[in-house]
Length: 149
Image 1 (tube, rainbow, N blue to C red):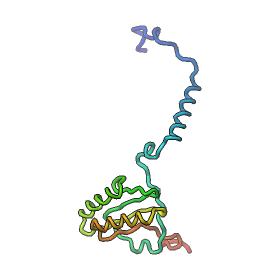
Image 2: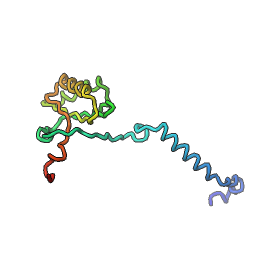
Image 3: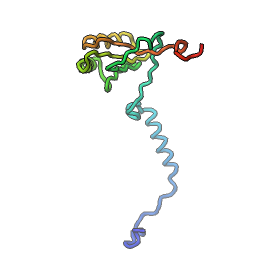
Image 4: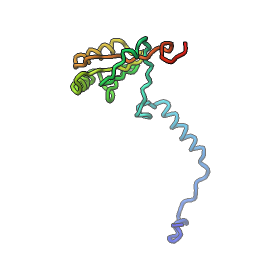
């Protein structure tokens, strides 16, 4: 051992008695702290957006390849290359529309998003120069190709 030449082992404090209970108290307090004050933004900065897209018949028939995508959560948060407010989104939309000759925007919004917010986003996109603004939807289970009826 490296302490033998200098006899450091004799100068060390003795090992503490059994402090296993303190470990469990500490772990419990940490768990309680994160349960009470925790946030998905703190504990998981790469937060996945859980969407339940609305169902619409013919959703795949009018599908077009988008040049830009905006995601809107149930709480009204707008994600377009990061979290943005509606004013910041208008600036971002202008930059995106200028990059392409025929810009197409698709808005991925969950079922619970307010229609007024979707209308505001569509108006901002049209003012920014987007030729088409589409709302993402999925085909109903009964209408999906390859599905037994």
